[in-house]
Amino acid sequence: MKIKRNISTILAAVALLSATPVLSQETVLRAAVFVPTNTVFGEMFGRFVEQVNKEGKGLVQIRLVGGPEAIPSFEQGNAVRTGVLDMASVPPAFYINNMPEADAAILSPLTTRQQRQSGAWEALNKLSNQKMNAWYLASYGQGVPFHIWTIKPPTSAKFDGWKLRTSGNYTPFFQALGATPVTTAPGEVKTALERGVVDGYGWPLIGIFDLGWGPDTKFRVDPGFYNVVVNVLINQNKWKSLRDDQRAFLTRMGEWLETENIRWAAEKVASESKRQNDAGIKVVNLGSDYQKLAYTSYWAELAKRAPESINILRPLLEK
Image (cartoon, rainbow, N blue to C red; front, side):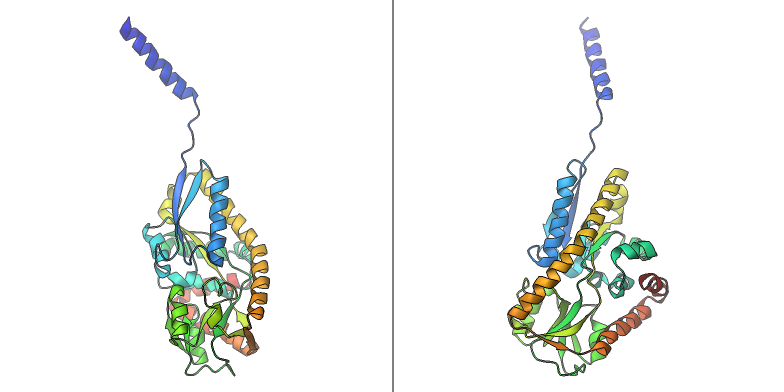
């Protein structure tokens, strides 16, 4: 009788489990951002993380391990490629050695939505899959131009003898201007300015005060050039391991980020421009030929490094 009762209990338990819906398993993604989390580009990614964690309870969560203090900025793209990170918020210039054509997006006048419609996003994602082992989820920063910032006034578009802090996206332009590019991570720029290692630096219109560069910056060179692109990459193996509902959710969150970027970028450009003016940073306008040189020099460099890809991408990015 006891054996029969035990069998009956087991069968009842199995029946109960069969009738109970299986709860979705939550996936936690480890992520990093290329700048400190309390700076403007770090904060925007932080908002994305918060939104995902708010809406994705029981489905997908993101654990932000930190910024360059956790994984150095120039190593984060490779960390996604190798699976050390599941996700990173990083500009393409910071992983240009693995995928030079990724930076073509900063030369595009198209919005991210227009790039998706033109086929540019699909082409960039395919290359990202192949070269970075990463899924190109979303990007933010568009609407924010780049500038050269200096400690002394430029008098023309000739920068012979100048030393300018660079990353991959500025170098061809700086060389075309006659300047000597000096590669440093963002966290090293303040010290380089203070010690006279560089006479200036390339950086977007927003964020110089967050990084502590404001007091050493005296001039902003106009007009701005390119468009800021900060990509949110997900390790391809991790992306494939997710369920369909999890991938659909993250895709929707990527669309949220790109939509939110439109308002965010406009607000930040206005507020940062005012702050720079109030701080006494003077604007030196070098004209349209200077701006044109930024584009022609970089397109030429990218075409040299990845001719086949650029021949495909450029028409899609300039439609």
